[in-house]
Amino acid sequence: MTEKEYQTYNAIRDYIWEHNYSPSMRELANILNISVASVYYRLSTLKEKGFIDYKKNKNRTIKLGGKND
Image 1 (cartoon, rainbow, N blue to C red):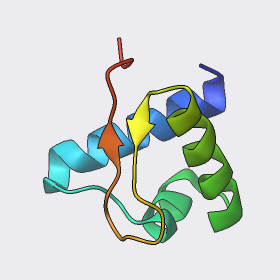
Image 2: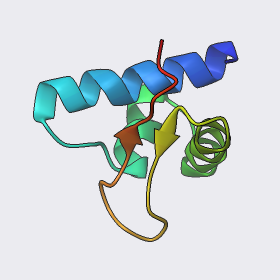
Image 3: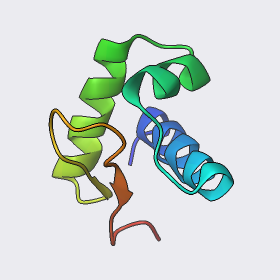
Image 4: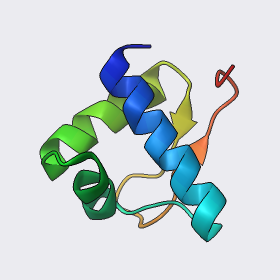
């Protein structure tokens, strides 16, 4: 996992712990101070690697995957 992916994963994890639901892409963009397009790219990469899962075109569906050790 790259440093940027790690930051994104941790932001998702922390948000879920605090709110009991996943962040939106816009919220993640604000948290990480990056564009929504960059968030989408990072989420796609994390999904490919099996760290998270989400449903396209659905709000707040990010779930942490099994490779989060």
